[in-house]
Amino acid sequence: AVTVYPNQKEAVAKVAQRIAGVIRNKQQNNQNAVLGLATGVTPIGVYNELIRLHKEEGLSFQNVITFNLDEYYPMQPGAAQSYVRFMNEQLFDHIDINRNNIHIPDGTLSLDAIPAFCLDYEKKITAAGGLDLQILGIGRTGHIGFNEPGSAPNSGTRLVTLDDLTRSDAARDFGGKENVPTKAITMGIGTIFKAREIILMAWSKKKAPIIKKAVEGEISGEVPATYLQLSDHVEFVLDEDAASLLT
Ligand code: F6R
Image (tube, rainbow, N blue to C red; front, side, top):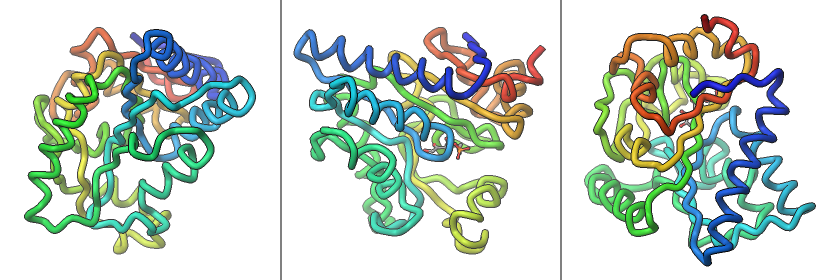
């Protein structure tokens, strides 16, 4: 499904309400809510709204377990560009989540420790009960998580090589493309697909061409987000700018 909102603010409020709904629903049944989270510019508004719901409307995150999509490799958690730091600053430091319930791929591992870590990440998601809701942004390559063109639809959590365009888009954060890591650890397309609900968000004209391909283009590993067309529990949540090239 594709839902277009007049602006980002309205879209963000709706997505935050959906997340809060999952959390409250689980609370009523004394269950954990398992959320798949993204970093980047796209979800910041949603995180701000979740913080507001926590501070002003009593939304508690004590029953929430989170799994982030990805982390650069190598990456120290304290580095300015780390997704650990991003998540702390944009969300976790401002809510009542139990720190033990937070999972983010580990950018500090030695290369030979990565496969076991990735298998364990998958096992932890399963042991938590599976992802109730996965939030996604989309890269200009069509990546979801860091599943770049060529990713297999059944891929799991693994070490990947970042696309050149993705590294160009990250250059500003790293003070030059040469400083952007060439690799990342990401949940796979298969991992994402197992989520019971998936919301892909995109804002602004800059995302319009890739959104057109993702929503209307031929399903292909060349644009990994096109695989989302195969699922009926995916919603593309767009502002008018991101949707502007859709027919
Ligand atoms: C981030 C992630 C990426 C981003 C995508 C869009 O965890 O998995 O797929 O969602 O690169 O990034 P922004 O939102 O910065 O445009």
